Length: 472
Image 1 (tube, rainbow, N blue to C red):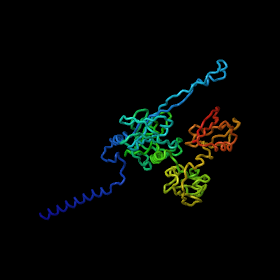
Image 2 (cartoon, rainbow, N blue to C red):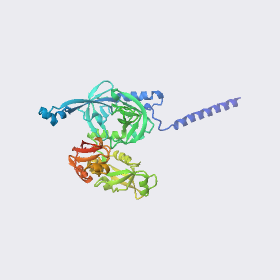
Image 3 (cartoon, rainbow, N blue to C red):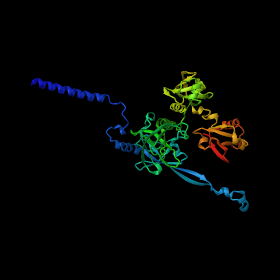
């Protein structure tokens, strides 16, 4: 009997030991990177996750109100100045210009307890007065620290301390299908929270030449611009910037500027008041399968093929050549020109980077010291700052117009694109000077300087009209 009792005690001890060992084993093999959960707390019920994130984020979101003053003259002025009208009624004194205050509305979010606020450039552009309203009801007059049109970002500052603020997340780690929340003031409805997923990454829009937008189906409407797109940790992974719509409302296509790009721009705006971007000095295009075959490369090779190396550029000094295929930057893969552009923009002027390049079928590494975009002759095709690739008149246009050049391509993010110039348009005159060839067009616009205002005479279809552009 005593032996049986001893055996039972030993058996129980062994079973208890095994149980403890199993629990310890499970504890030690827990995943090192758990799935994102609101505030990193696995105890929060699933139906409360969005609630907790919204409670954390909303106090740091602000309403941005702007006022701009515009001058205009009466639309009847043109009628009264008509020679036929003056013949009957005589000369009239010129009508005085009228001023009107235009009000705007957007969103923003605080990134520090001492009142630095991120929003979109297009929210505050041209504003004479910017007012920021907090969730607790307080209002502040905001100072524009800096704004960057190319990235559509701006940094504001209000005079306050101890404010709630949001932390930047890492937009390179987000995945398609991941849950996100958008918070802002759509259509004037303050602190609206909408939920959705990351629909796509790396979207390039004609709004900017630098961004690889995050696409989301979290509802974004007018007034959301400048608000945060946050993950389930409550960290900002994007700045809501644009929607794709044909109705003026949400259609399931919202776009946000990735946080990793925004962080760099905002840092420059805070420290320098402006953004100075790095400059490589190449023109490039995507490597197609046919190009890869023609160059003797393996099927399926992806990269950015260099079509031109600008004179005296960092690329030329580093020895980069036409037909080089860039497949990597600093250990990161490059699949297309957008990848290369984004990788370059992650660095600063003066930094040394290493490009992985395929040249004559062999992989080599090329060190490059990046320059500043202020050294660049132009970021646009043909060296012209309008952003227009011109071509000779062809077909019907050649028969219909006595002179001019045809628009072959309009580059995104350029003055021409923002002014609404389209491929197929015919440019008849530049600053009232008739254009007879592509060479003449390029020669005229290559002499333009930053700040110049250009008057284009443009023909489209059966109509002819004027467009003014400002060189940036």
